[in-house]
Image 1 (cartoon, rainbow, N blue to C red):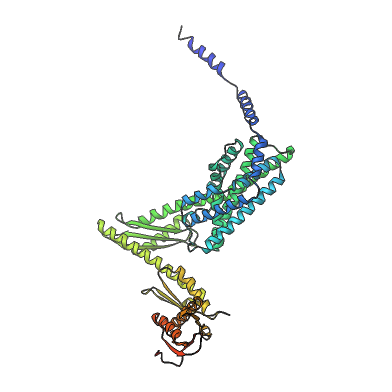
Image 2: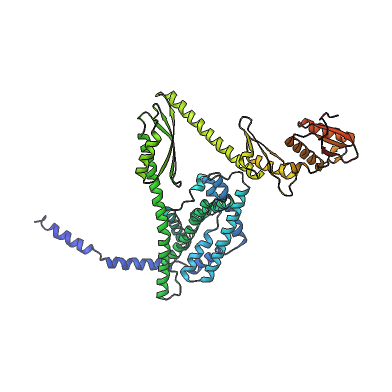
Length: 516
C-alpha cells in the first residue's frame, strides 16, 4: 500500500510546483523594470555626450592611434595593432550616434557624425602620408585580412557593440571596451589610408566597406541596447515602428553581401582542398606537394604548384588542368614545377633546398623587373632602354630630356631610385641636353671647398662619371689642385688650367685627358 500511494503524492507535488509561463514572464518583467530603475540615464547620456564631440584630445589620440595602427599593419605585428586600439577614441562618437538615435536627439546625432567623419578623414590622411613616405609598401597578411569583409566581420562588430553599450550603460566601461570597438574600426581605417597611398583600389574599397559596415552595425546595435535599457525618444508609435523597420533593413542590406562574401571564402577554402587533393593524385604516394598558390580572382583561375617527386609526370599540367576545370566549374591555368628526387631523406632535403633556391631566383627576377620598370618610368623611357647587369647587380638607363631639368635633377632622380634598390648600383645617365648646361662653379674658402662648393664638386664628379667625359678646372692653382685630386680619387679624368677665382668646371672636349 505504501508503494501504491507514492505516485499520486509525487504527481500532486509536481502539480503544486508547476509555474505558468505567463507568471514567469511577468516576474522577469518586474525584475527588468527594477534593473532599469537603477540606471541613472541622465548621467549616462551626459557622459556619452562629452565623449562624442570633437576636441583637441580626441583628434590627437585618433591621429596617434592611426599612426601606430598603420605601422603595425606594415610590420604585420598584431601586438602593435592592439597597442593602437588601446589609444583609439573612436568609441565615443560611434556610440554617441547610437544613443542619439535611441533618444531622438538629432543635434547630438549631427555632432557625433561630424566628430566621427573628422577623425576618420584625419586618420586616413595621416596613414596615407606615412605609407607614402615609407619604404615598405607591400600588402602584408594583416592588411590583406581587412580587405575582404564577410559576415564574421559583421558579427565581430555586433558583439563589440553589445559589450561596449552594456558596459557604458552599466557604468563599467574601461580600456578593454575601447579595444573592443577599435578592433572593428581603427585597423580598417588604417588600411583605407594604405590603399589610398598605394593607389590600390581593391584594398581601398574593401577596407572602406569593412569600416563603413562596422561603424553602422556598432551605432545601430548601441541604439537597440539603449532602447532595451529604457532610453526612449519622444516618437509616435508609427515613427518608432518606421525607425525599427529602417534598422532591420540596414542589417539585411549589410548581411546579404557580407554573407555572400563569407560563402565565397568558404568555397575558396573548399576549392583549395580539392586542388591539393587532385594535384597529389597526379603523382605517386612517394611524391609531396611543396607549395600551392591559387589566385581565385584571375580569369582563368591561376594555380602554381611545386612538387617533389621521384617519378616526374610529363603530362601532369594538361591532365590536372582538365580535371580541376571539371571539378571547380571554372577555367584553370595550371603550372606545375616538378623536382625529381630520390626516396631518401637527403634527397628530399636537397630537393627542398633546390625549390627554395628556385623561389629566391623567382623573387629576384620579379624584383629586377620592378626595378627596370621604375627606372624606365622615372627616366621617361621604355624598359628596353634599361641595361641590367645581374652579375654586377648594376642597372643603367639614359634619361630622356625633362623640361627645365638640370644635372642636379637627374642626380636626385637616381638617388630616389637607389634608395629603394637595396644591393643594386643604379645609374641614371643625363641626356645630351643636360650635359650642354654649364657645370657649376666650386667655391673655396681658406683652401677648402665651402659647403656649397663641396656640393657643386660632387655634382661635377657625378656628371663626369655618368657621361664618361673629362673635365677642366680653371681657377687659382691651389684650389684647382685640391679639387682635381678629389675628382681623380673618384675616377674622373681631369686637368687644371690657371684662372681667376672662383674655380670653374667645364667639359674637356678638346683635351686628351692628360692632366697636370
